[in-house]
Image (tube, rainbow, N blue to C red; front, side, top):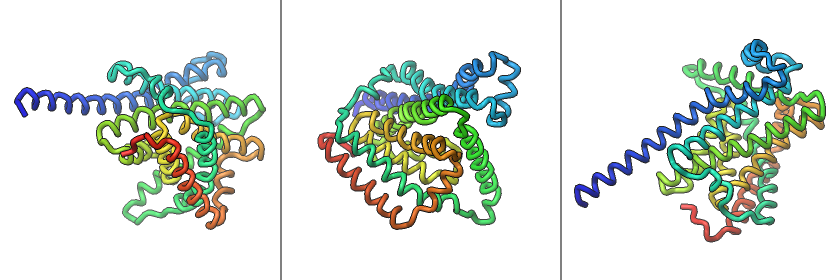
Length: 312
């Protein structure tokens, strides 16, 4: 290798590392700046365009039932800003890549979409066992401080979820369904499967590393350790749906169904999401095992529909 080739290779490596660092910067900016700003703008109409009320609302999010629609709008704006706008800006400014390529690639086959639906429900059954196990984890004494922090964060997240899904009307339920299921499915899959998983695969050359690392980050970024492993499994399944098919619409739809099931159940049964999770924890072990077997079998079938897609 000539000196010129070495310099070019070094330049490419530096450019790759710079791209990853800049992506992390955009993600952090999206979570802590762009998302909250957009969420605040979308919630303002439901607060009478009162800036003073907005400040109090953001500080006490989930504390006033009369502001539930504003809270849902705030969450929607936060998701769009953090998980869609931020990576979109990174793609345009840093990668010079059209974000639409993540939604236009691959084939959308009726049978494959049916399998994605079936996968969503078999995965819910399997995950019900993981939910119970994960929530019951206990830490050694030297990690007591972390466990207390994690429990507190989990309780706060459960309280906010309960507040968001305790709908007052059918119209509010529809808004919640669009935000919690629709926007979350599109925005989170765009970032974690479309952008992150693709970048990691390009760097590592191994799709399995890309799927698991992006799924880990997907779960970790929710800051809910006692729901970490069930969410990790969701991320892995969504990741392989994208990896095998090349189309982001499969994980988007599966993500939508997973969230929509919780939102619709909360509305129909008149229960909040934390109560619903307690119900799913009672799933018998043999159904959990059948859910795992079904998930694996359906994923193998799904993969067979895209034989030309390289996965490693």
